[in-house]
Length: 182
Image 1 (cartoon, rainbow, N blue to C red):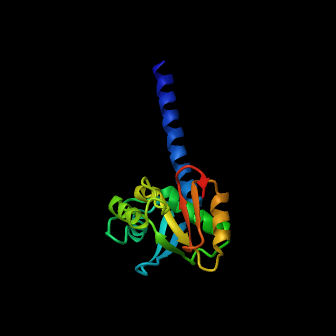
Image 2 (image 1 turned 90 degrees about the vertical axis):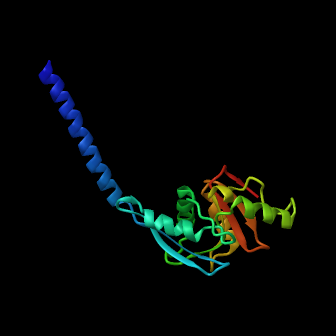
């Protein structure tokens, strides 16, 4: 009985080790993911590899978080990784070269910035009191060379969050909240 238990434990250990090796190989098979963008307010450019053979790249994510910071206050938070992946998926759905970047109008907004924008523009400004921007789950984007209505349709076709269309202001809002559009 002891021998059977040892074999069982040994077999389980071997299976676990094999699955870990398999996971490493699976990561290596995944394509590298990059995000390229320019903040339209300060002209800062980011070209960051945020996912590679070893999974998420902390340095690349930190670069993206810094680039999507509240440019008014300098506040930085960890942006939602699903949002970052959503931007890459939208770009890929549109068939846009990965080296071409988004124009970022707004990424993270601190509660203080959000309240100031809401107060300045009034209650019907499109600035929500509980904005996904304050959670690091939203960004307002344009993609040079891609018509806004096409960008909106691509974003909504993903069915991965909210999509707001602001043609007068020249951007599309995308977030990873519940699926909805306006």
